[in-house]
Image (cartoon, rainbow, N blue to C red):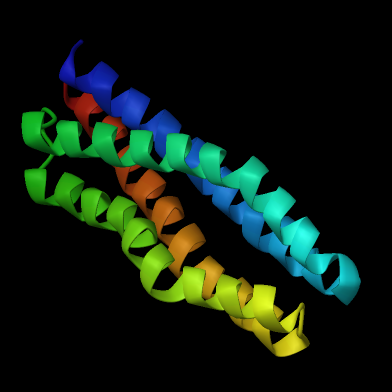
Length: 150
């Protein structure tokens, strides 16, 4: 696979990962306050069963493909640019166990309080949605630069 095709594949997965993350933040988590407290634990469990595997497949694929792109390089693109995209792809995987899982555990224990949902929503945007959006933007620019110069 050519370096440019690899970067396009990385961009594709980064974009889909970003879209999924934005939907999780703005659609899924933002509506958790409407779940009745007595149904919340079952809902949260069912939600995790359905969303976590998708997040793993998209996010890990995005991270690995961006990492391979950074290692192989991209014509006419400084490697440092792609390494920034790698770091951005890794942020959700660092933030999830450190910040997001503890909030999810508190939600499971305390129920869908307004404060916890707000906290989950904003941390999710900052740590799991914004990084792949920026990563996608960097990869898009890198692919355009690489293609334009060839």
